[in-house]
Amino acid sequence: MRKISLFIATSLDGYIAKSNDDLSFLKLVDKEGEDYGYKEFTDSIDTFIIGRKTYDYVLKEIGSSFYDNGQRDIYVITRTQRPSVGRTTFYTGKMTDLVEQLKSENGKNIYCDGGAEVINELLKNDLIDEFIISIVPILLGNGTRLFKEGRPEQILEFVKAKTFETGLTQLHYKRKK
Image (cartoon, rainbow, N blue to C red; front, side, top):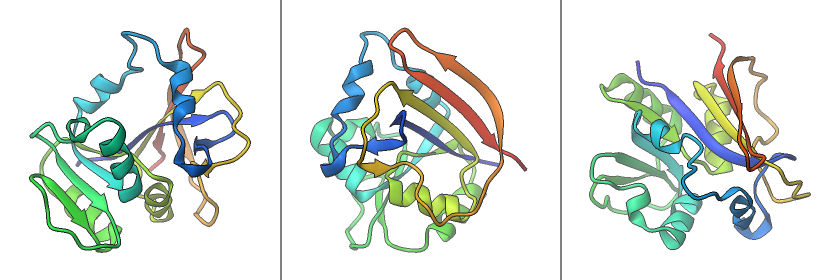
């Protein structure tokens, strides 16, 4: 069965963005030739679930090729109906229905790339199977929290931890069944 994985970076104090959706703090750990396991991870997925604000940000900052390599399905979670573009679907239904449908289909794993609203909705329904969280060595003080309040407690099983020269630490957990 396919699993949903969260692969995301956060500040040490738990923020995935500064206020005004600023992600510039991620540049602190930029290092030529180091992708922190991202390519290996994305080789194991063929579907993205992503919030509209995160999707728009990536399109503006990086471009559509970041998600759409022609071989992946992209589901952008949004409140506004829009026509599909290639393999990108703008999804306005219940996220639990989407996840149930995706998990029942054949394919590689599913990557939740944020944002916080989407992550929180998935957590409320205990739908994230794997957590790969990279901790950037900075205290931001405020911004968009990775984990919001109002979700059930979930016990995770430790898989591994990895440290990098840049000071980034990557934690890998899976949902305890």
